[in-house]
Length: 156
Image (cartoon, rainbow, N blue to C red; front, top):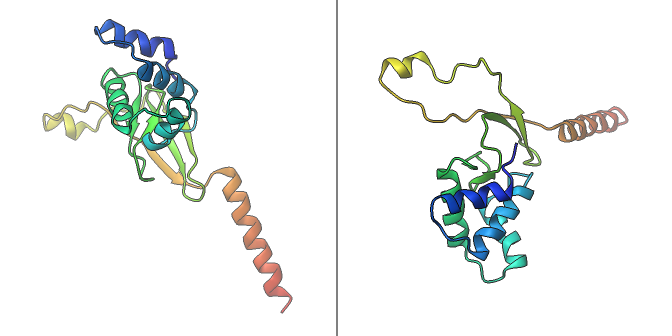
């Protein structure tokens, strides 16, 4: 579940950090971001409301929120880091065709780390579970194209 903008702003205040107009805008945009935008996409959205906001400010603010544990910056293999407004453990379903990203709850009893990691003294602090495939719309479109190609080939 995404963290409300008010909670993001409260986190800055709790650490004695100023609530700048840039931070306030980014907190609002993060709350509205249900599409796992790239950092650059979030910057473009911010520029529509505040043309002078810099990409550096966006990266800095997002990094701070990620360090607070209120958002996640995830590399999903689709280019730039993606902004995930839901910090709770979940997997990502990434469509190879259209690039859409769908959150998928993880089984609560899924082991948090392989036993070997603990045996090696390795402390797992986070995990990323990514499934790649095709979303329902792309799978349907692909099946329709295959069907059409079969029909065309049968009429030759």
